[in-house]
Length: 114
Length: 117
Image (cartoon, rainbow over all chains, first blue to last red; front, side, top):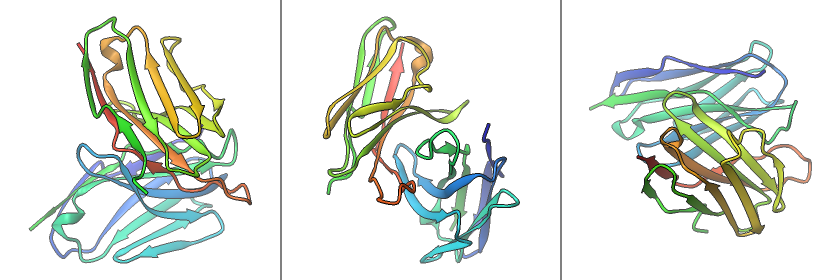
């Protein structure tokens, strides 16, 4: 059974710092991995999607990498801002049992202090 | 596009009452998903539809839960009777179908916060 783990559960950094969020998954048989952002009381917003054949994806100050063989992904946020404060979740789409069935981690709650 | 629309945004009800949550997916999306989020268990997939047909309901916790998708623009998740342990945030998401069959990204609604007293 696929399991997704995100460490740390919470992270607090000063504004301007570069930071890395980690995601690990137990089964490397995935179609893709997706990073989401969730603001308090809001739904999830898709940030980046990495297909299994890709190594990384970039969007603005965000860069996500994928190492499928080791079951790891990282989300790098450059020059963090208070507006980046949110919970970040990663999810994998497994090749077994239906690729539409995303398996989510429990997220990392990020606080960027001004 | 307005994105995925859910209603109500908040629902407070008493144990034993019937609860109906509603979702309008993004136009043109072929997949619709219902999730539940709690602090203890995180985000869990309850059921999903493809072209209005339920594909996998293995995540539905009990027979008290049911979901329907009568047409491409509307879905409901019903809990009857509701219990306090059903208190959670329920999300609806939709996703387009890709010709290659490779899973595409999901777009989430704002969620319905359900409190069962």
